[in-house]
Length: 112
Length: 447
Image (cartoon, rainbow over all chains, first blue to last red; front, top):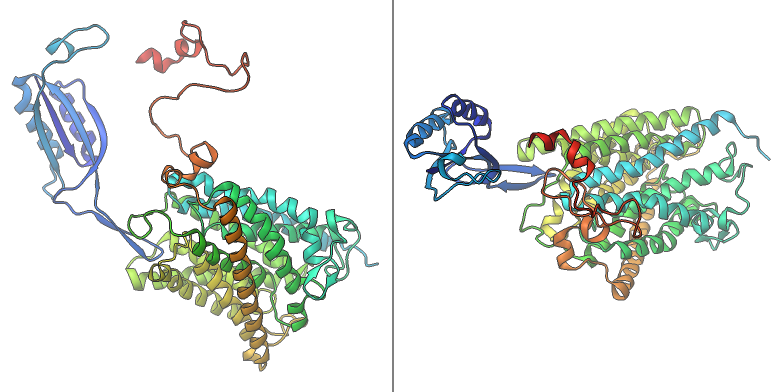
């Protein structure tokens, strides 16, 4: 069992979600995050005072998958989220020890 | 006794309501420019002046400002609690409308003027100290200056300086009280180190639009009659505001590359301020010159606070102070007796003396309001402290001063309900049964 965490451009979220649904992923968690990498921030000007905004808004999406699906899911996210420009994001893969469905107490793959 | 004119009275009733509407407009204008944790505290500073300003004015403020003159400096207390201020006109001020309506029109000015100051100490003043300051300031600063400039017998009025709708009494007065406040209360924590973005500019634009709308009552109402003079004041007010909004975004485009909505709104307000003293004395082309100048110079002025390190949070000095001075001086340049026979000619119409009088009125107002406000604030600071604690400042005024928040968007948990006496209908559900709402809410069903 692995957790795949992807930081993507916010406007790509729907495409990524649809692509994941089409390969049978039936659950994911999304959060709005901010951060910086190679993509620069931007400048805002209020009454002549300039502010540099370093943190760029991104969407973080977390999916839990069985080990054999990892490369397929990673490829799907990459395909759907790619624009070819700086700031497309990152994908991280983590091992997961266990998963529990709160309603029934099912564990491991059954809980997914 | 003069007869009441129904046209004048109808217009002044409307104008009074228009000026009232400026204060909530100012509340939104300022409220949008602060950080979201201070939106309610900032709105409250203006909004509650409709309460404080009204009561002070009715009890004794009006009498001090407009009551029978004492030594050309202050009104006496014979109109205290609005005694003798009734339906009959007072020919000294407005011969064709009820005296009580003139009082009400002036009351709205007395409400918004102190509210203008609040932009300077936004995001860090203690609410209780703020209230004490406002009462003291209306008593010791606003009422005397209103008397000097507008009261029968007031010494600036006798001098012959022109101030149609309150450039000195309202804007310069408020702005230099604001400067004193900035010096005493100090910078916001993080000023010039961290970004302090306006949190809701659409709110600020809406506020500016309400100010623009209400200002027609402010300036055209200052004719105190319904007719040609009110119409001229109305039109030049609009023209100057338009020119100032354009002037501000033009210089902004040149200096930083982009015209901004905050710039357009700020420029409009700067134009409204600048045309205020001139409204009943100048023509349309002069109004363009006044507005355009105000838009450009006020833009340059608001940048100065970073050079001096003064945290005039919402640029009261840069917009109202500088805009007010530009307006007062350009009134001395462009005023014409063709527009208003009761006024005077300015510099371009062959009377340089008026400019000198305008300068005196400006200098005296600045000097008095700065010194008097400084003393009042020092005393309040010594007795009860002006600033909130550092912790409260970080938390924000909304929660620390008023126990509420402006925006409840998303977030987790609603907390528990504690309201009213034991056994009241607002008591939280203590039984172990799920509540009725929990069972029937379809959202809960789905989850």
